[in-house]
Image (tube, rainbow over all chains, first blue to last red; front, side):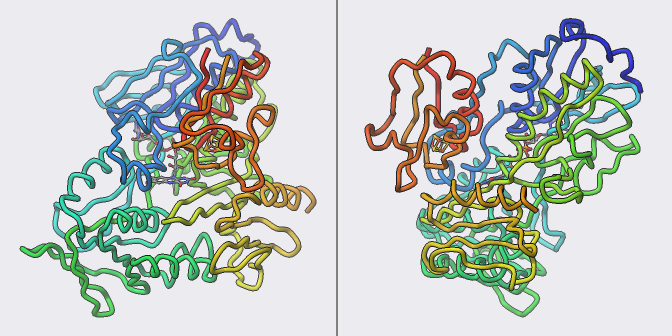
Length: 412
Length: 71
Ligand SMILES: Cc1cc2nc3c(=O)[nH]c(=O)nc-3n(C[C@H](O)[C@H](O)[C@H](O)COP(=O)(O)OP(=O)(O)OC[C@H]3O[C@@H](n4cnc5c(N)ncnc54)[C@H](O)[C@@H]3O)c2cc1C
Ligand code: SF4
């Protein structure tokens, strides 16, 4: 145990220790908050490769795209005093040396740590097809948003969104509301097929269609060409789509390359145990979108969960776990969050609790209340256990269904 | 200590209700009850210091980052 010397130190003897948090976004900031709230008396350094202080990403595909408000409207709030920790922005971590307990930054600064929190999140995936170098956008960061806004130079533009996931669908709604003509192109048969299933995905697709979005599903662009009249997308089924603007929203890749060469399992995020710990015995944790962990409330399969709420919950969990590990060598409880997710598309509020994506058998997805084409609650079952609920509308019932998923999981 | 909620930002997620049930509640339409009494920004009366931890938690978990403490 490299950390043995820390074992019997109390909180005060942590004074000369240091926790480094890599990734200055939601999960990183909430980790800093919770470490300090847990009474940690050492130095905390938050390192982010973006030049912006931590900000909120969900508005990027929603309000922030349609409003003229600037960065301040999405800046994340924190109950921690800014002078109680150190923040380094605009310089990312380039390498990790787990044995030596050091992080090396892009400018070659070497930072030693006693505790490490990895909160480096995801970046957008790009389609590996022949396509022009410029003019194709994606949306993960504030700078991406600014670039897209800068390209929306007139009303009524033809916009092709590649990808039928949540971000693609939200963008379609917001851009249509702004007066643009949106086409969604994707290989899936319905919107949000994997997380929600065919029935609900189909219903949400109908909402989109009724509001003017063109759905070109079940096909994949093979090539994108740019010419004097904008872009041309050639699909595998022969469909040709013309657009003034192309946005790729085909999913994301975990930012883990900087952690290579430490013998870690970095396939699809940082593999952690049920306490979000990774590595070979040190006080190393991963939080937020980049963490792949087993949620024992469901099963023992490690998964990444790309939900705002998980970034918050994992960051909030981290503080006590870290401080306890550094002072006593143990972690009192495992991380067993109730995943919750929301998405706003046109006037639709979609909310999800639990992990509906666990259920692929359509006969195990049942309407609990309402009507699939207006407001509905869908239950996702593994035998008798309700492992997830998805609501469209029905805002007044969301507490009830969240509780029901929780109860159902507890009683299995 | 007072709590303020920007009701234009708030979109009735109700996360604050889980975090600080003594301060926040949803009405029967699933909206934050402060909407029944205020428009724009809701400002509470003077609140007990004991509530600070749970309100700070509500600030953290609000997806719209609509909540603030005024000391
Ligand atoms: C457009 C959009 C809309 C969304 N809408 C919703 C929604 O409606 N509901 C919902 O539940 N969730 C939504 N999400 C997901 C939610 O925003 C994420 O779950 C959340 O941002 C995860 O936070 P994180 O801190 O783990 O990772 P991220 O927010 O990805 O932050 C990681 C940070 O680490 C930085 N970084 C990466 N590598 C390094 C390095 N080597 N050194 C230093 N810094 C590094 C990155 O630049 C970034 O700043 C949305 C996401 C996007 C992009
Ligand atoms: S958590 Fe935020 S957005 Fe949700 S109801 Fe409370 S204040 Fe409104």
